[in-house]
Length: 128
Image 1 (cartoon, one colour):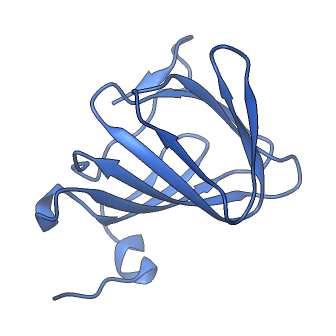
Image 2 (spheres, helix red, strand yellow; image 1 turned 60 degrees about the horizontal axis):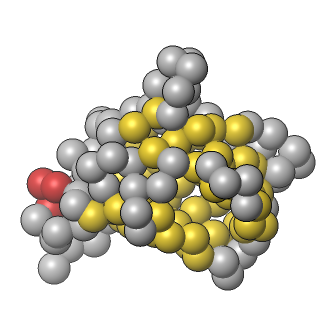
Image 3 (cartoon, one colour; image 1 turned 180 degrees about the vertical axis):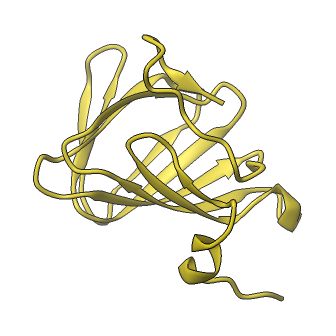
């Protein structure tokens, strides 16, 4: 058993500014649990075009609000108590509301190394 806090991660390479927010990678590949758990903050007023080609992701909202939009144009409001699941490596837009950061618990399978970041300026979706 081990215990790890946000404060423990903040001073390490597993505290990542991913482009439009931050991610505390609380569990990573090195922990040998078979998945990654992150405390993810999406900065208010931002939009990110994302796609995980090598990972499946589930995000559970614990604070703030925002939305996820599919490539087909379907929009889903994300508020505390909502989970969204990218079960087909779905390319999507993630937006935080204009006045509140969106705070998520993100779970990745297979696990992340923990230092991955997004490239949000390449004109296409950012993927890892």
